Image 1 (tube, rainbow, N blue to C red):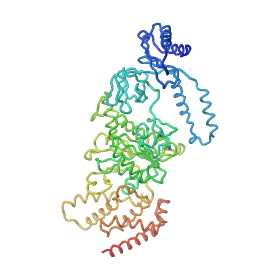
Image 2: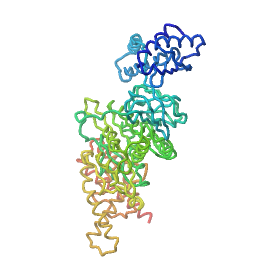
Image 3: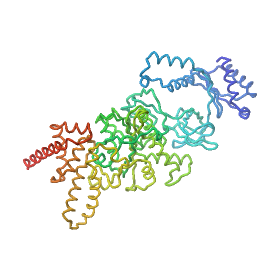
Image 4: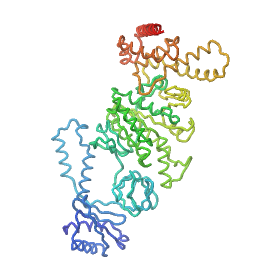
Length: 610
């Protein structure tokens, strides 16, 4: 240890210590290698001369320093280590966004020149840290004294190497959540402010990967070599940065694309009791984005690990992981990790959006997210409100869902479509969390338990489901054909509930019931079988124009399959025209002839079988 370096550290430390701190001073000196006894004594003498009192000094070693020294008291640390300077230089290089993929005009030589210039101009300096002390720790939440300069959302590092985030500021204490288990955190441990908010890796390297709430891979496929990072929390785009939602995001589900359309940049809530097909609906939507250029992010909050594994396996089976990122905070993980997961997923999705891409993000589900936040808030001693949730529970989800948008062309024209999922109890839409999120989103798809148990999949209640974007998010053909379906289904549901009492029905009522049964049969759809929009248009056209009216309800699925197969084999040009133009004008006659032809062939086959 060089004497001039010791003097430099000691003089700098004197500047950050108030007279009150110097009177009862106990220091810890951390060095890269162990000091000799005479070097330790020399350091004590120098500190005594500068501070006016010979301090009590404890010596520790840490290989992370590489060289240099850290001097630490109870609430201050002066870091003059080489390791810290190198980590600071690395962050500066990352902040300069020196990536070839985002700057295609720069050559490799130019990139090296810029990096060399930054390194040459870098000025090492003593870094003064706020250091706190853990007073209490339990259930993933730490109460810390000191840290007077802490800010909400700022990262902290515990003595055992664990990381956390400041979430609560009090007069004399700071409340922080801990990432991971935190098994080795004890009262009296030191905590250091890191000076920046939490961020996650982003970029194309994330595609096809399964990560935890802080962006670390958990799929056993090795590290993620991401070159960019993005803060978990960021402001939502302003009104001037957005344009109207008028481009469809096709889900592949007939009932939704026909009656409750979703547009790119919209926030559409999927809500219903447990085991009613909410996750299945979201997964089908992800599967339908194949070959559309839409990037998908699936965030699993509070799910069982086995359930998430099944979802990932299904996405891999259908080739959807090529354009999907899965963020997992399972039920076995701590409440802080479940709290962070949706913000991590949103940050990953936002990176694609701001690069001009269309993104779909699924939050499964936000009711478990709210429960995790409630448990953390109670441990942080925040005042409980309705149903014991803290007062800012609305803001918790508002600041997340408001980040969904369709950006103006000058900002790249990307979009972020959010499908939050919320679980209800006994279909109670008026509960606290459901009403909060309904008021934030642009519509909801309500899945009804009675319909699900009756074998109707997806079990969508069209009376309580709505899309506030409406026909603006539909292609012209679907908008024209599907307009009467909602009303006819609502009338059928009302008549069906009346007819179950066995009353005598007139001919018109019987016809209405028969038509409603066929609409329900056409809109039924199995899991993992999303349909392209052009095939949906053909089926809705056949339904609206009465091509199913003389078929038995149980015959409809088989006829649908045969009809689509026939069109693909003999009239592929019709499907291609609908796909390219979004309209059926000019091809209605040919389409009707093709459907009639398919009907004759199918009916002939049925007679032959009989």
